[in-house]
Length: 123
Image 1 (cartoon, one colour):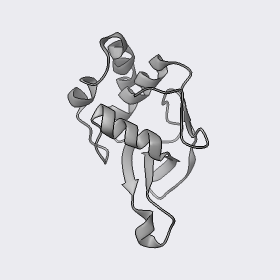
Image 2 (tube, one colour):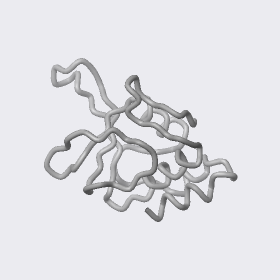
Image 3 (cartoon, helix red, strand yellow):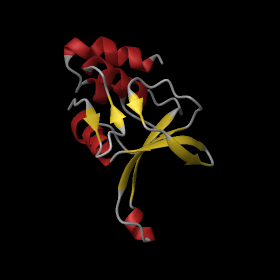
């Protein structure tokens, strides 16, 4: 479900609902530019689990603001935001990993924003 800001520190922000659905399109395209993860860090002694988006290319053209932090080998950047990852999994049929079902995700997009979603698929 759309909100302007996600995360306790505003790690992900959108100026408009159009931008939100464009970002969903970008994340749905399954072209090895991004992937969705839920990392159970508490199993490694950290304080808790984290929802993360891995960006696998330099300067990803994703609409909106995503706070990009350092990646690791094979991951250029990542954005940590439990709230956003939970949102796209629970409300928009995203799954963990880099392969998404565009039709399943598109089915959650209101008809007035299908054009924005489709635009995100082209970025």
